[in-house]
Length: 265
View 1: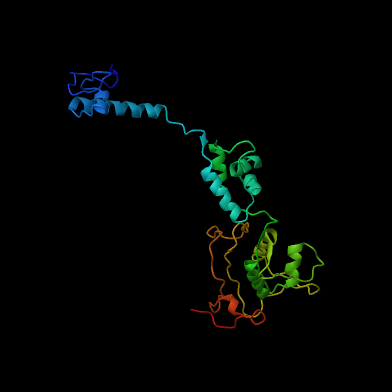
View 2: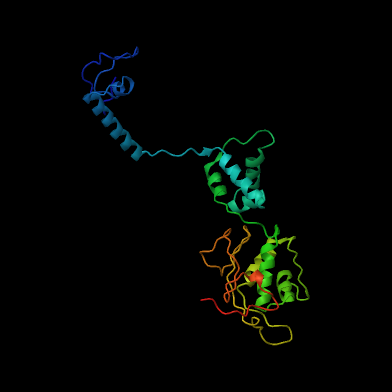
């Protein structure tokens, strides 16, 4: 029986082979099942599609509330390989830690087969962000300390800022060791602070000789960027640390004898 909304049956389709019904020309069933392409059947199909499009506009399809956890599990494991714990992922995503644990390893009695779409969206939006106590390589920290010393900072002043203790008198950072995210974040922030006055001198130190400030782009991901950094700089992009006077890498300079070359250009 045809639908009066989009079916206007005409004559019987003699080529119909359906055993359950006799299709007539001008119906959507004749167009789809019998593959009839006469003018009446094509017109019926057009009327059906217009009606379906209008119906979908009034009653749009709602995405299913549950989705497979595969994408979410892959994203969490990628963050964990980079040093971010699953508890930190849960805290940043504002999702219960038990839910993140169930996505990774399942529950005691069963594996997690489906999760809420809202949970997937929240976790996939998490970017790498290490906790303050996490350990990272010291390569960037050594470069920053060298730059600060060239500007006029003392290693004792840098150490006091990192530890927060006024009695700290030395700074030891081994290139092949690690340091905490908190310490590296403090070093990054010092790049945008003026050189402090030396103890008992009553004046602020000036950068040594002709040394000029250079821009450092951070290379250790997961550590918060200081507010002073321009919006165009992002974690993971690497830029050589160069001297603005001779355009040579800062590593080629002696800290005790800053560059005395002429400004390029």
